[in-house]
Image 1 (spheres, one colour):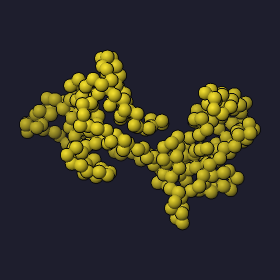
Image 2 (image 1 turned 120 degrees about the vertical axis):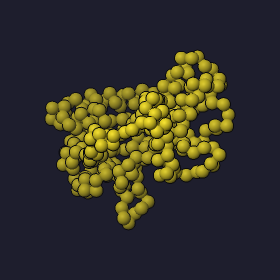
Image 3 (image 1 turned 30 degrees about the vertical axis):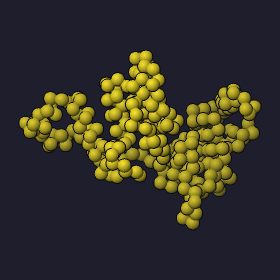
Length: 267
């Protein structure tokens, strides 16, 4: 029933009722459809091509029995894409060497570059905030609304803003009341993470590697001052010594992240 408020719930309930019949026959595919389905998008992954192929084929079989066709399958692995086409699964248009027009698709509205396998989250709206006027609770809420992140990639970053907004509600501030000094200081630290340039710089475009490095150093320095004030005071005064040999012994070597294959279906 299109256009009805309960339509998403009815779709989800129908699919969940349908896939339960295949729980024992196709456990992996059933689990994927049960936990990785958002309205009409399936977003999941696998450790290798064979596993991804089996899950996708089983999921396609399950949904076909309900007269629901999974289409526009997409992956960051070209071999899997060709295998899907060979197996008769409808794949998403892909970027190729001869066609540079299609470089990415969208997963839950987030651009996904399937060639280089990365997601892009647009936060340019934060730079459009008017910082020349007093910051109010309304500005904080507007900032939270300018970040579209349904998957939660930026949760470590956005959770600070949500906690700040919660604190404003607890203090019973009106929408257009200026932020108290302590809250305003927290707000400035949060904004610094996404915009380490001053208003007087008037520089546009992506941050340079030097600016990112400066932001990282500033954040680390601020954290150290908060957690280790006495040690930082001695360090800045030149009376604090660090045994870097001991430090290197406790820092683990970098690990190589496992590769994965992502599959998605979009309407």
